[in-house]
Image (tube, rainbow, N blue to C red; front, side, top):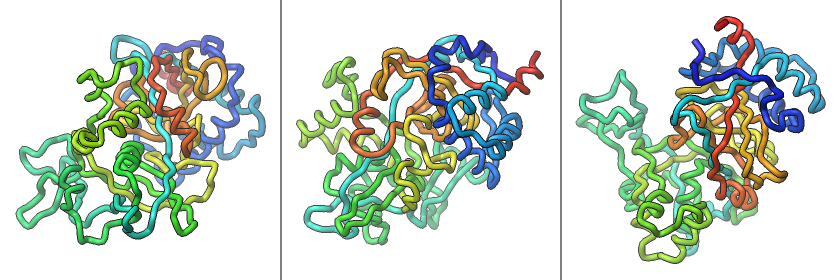
Length: 366
């Protein structure tokens, strides 16, 4: 059953709908449509089920769409927009993320000393079937020991050397701050000192809760709310080298990476929905509530970072994140590299969320 948070409207009620470049969204949508041939997406709890999306995915794989008009007609044929509203939990808010690009070395040197690590052998997935009694239900990972499963090493322990000597290093970068923000983003392009371009992406994590250091700086008055951005956090870290590590260690969550192919340099990393992200068209959502592949029309009247007078775009749900919680909460993928980082780092905006509901679901609910 569809959540009452979805309030059906007409496409004409979506500000700027007719002016959007729908072909780019359709291309992102079809990447998910092809992926689900291998493994269906899990349905979110708000009622937009994978089963309802499946025939739409199938049609997108078979339909030749070559223009914005054709793409818009495709979405209007299969979907009806519904504004997400109803209480504080549905207040729309967007942030941004991107794929950093950084110079890296394949080996440790005097300059490049900060490693990215692959998944350790003693890190195991846990769920309700193997979770020890009394173990924090938040944890999806644990450490296998002779005595049983225990909490995994956290960021301070790992960066303090808990996993040294296991040969887990994938590559090394120069700056601990660069490494930290790559952990936050969950992926990066590495411009190797030997001339190669490599990509690393999320493989697993220690399981600890994510703690945003920006909130710590806000709560302590170190950065004013109106000045908060990724860039201002970086400036604070650079200006306080004696306090930087301690601040970053407040985020106990530590990410492990794997190498991934760079098949198309115009696309981002393969994320939670198992498709490469599209800059300006992929959005991270709360995967417990929403189903990957769902289109969302997102209107952010005071966001101009992507160009234009306002942000009003059709986005496809193709990623998630531990900080992305709520029905109208989204993280906009800005792309790869420094320019994308400048865009992503400044996004903290109230937004209007319109989920595109399969018409078959609305017919059943009437």
